[in-house]
Image 1 (cartoon, one colour):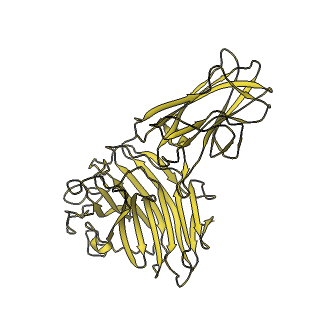
Image 2: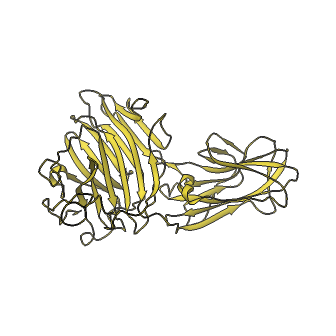
Image 3: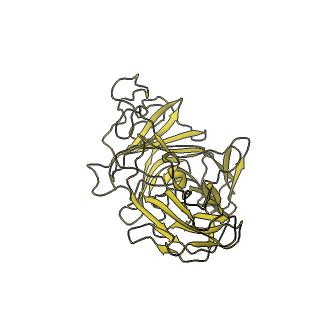
Length: 420
């Protein structure tokens, strides 16, 4: 796949703050060339102050470990010297790219010093598609991973071939990259199926634009299947190494520049009007509606947008909760439709574990049948999640309990499927 560039390594490099000559620099404009003056919408942010924050799944092999460092506020991804020792960390969510808006990704890390048979990767990518920085042995590259042809293709551009600033002291910034030091990797994505991806580093408070992957007027299809992807860190021994190694995972964020507008497929499901759900035991939480991604749509972007509740039993107080990543026992999982990436369960009998995202109370009366709209700022907090490393969907469940035994309720959930 030919992705190389029309831009010369000698292209003038103005200041990100507009103090240099020529066109606006990467730090001053987004992937579509718009001046960065509008408020971005944060789709995701990750830091580790007191613990591993629970926003990532981890795959360990052959002695690999992922350990929280309370003093440094980061996660140490450590491998032994054995062949095949590895640690992979991937977010439980993919992040929604909206056509026409620049997607800005920033992630921070410290690579282990280069060594024979050690490979390290950081970026915005999953198993099949995405963009990342790689240090493999002593070779550092920007990589485009694509499955748009039906087969996995990885296009590597080594540092000596970066088309804007090689960060070897000879480029527009006059800086030299030290891959053993802590770095801020940035990229912005102008997808639309065949736009440009710009990649580089933030150094001394400036966005250093190192390489652009250009596609428009070059390729004959899409360059990656989707730009709605997870974040990922990897450290792997491709064969035995001389000693153990550690990649430090620090912070990450994904921003939709210029905000975000919901324009997906609106869906809803609720309990049958003639068959309310009975809550057999007072104080016990029962699943009313559970949702999860289909196994065939694990990278879909699906968010809960509204909840409606109706208490059927009089003289009863109810407590409802929205729970992420529980386990629903019993019932039947049903497809929400051929064109949907979701399946639901209305007949679960019990639920266990999970974390509470929201909760509230109401009483059964003619004046109390609440409908809750999820605030725009909270939308992506109610996104369906999955483990991309094991291809396992996580549930999102509405659970309820009542103050009296054998009370009954109706409920419905609305969601939006952005990935269509």
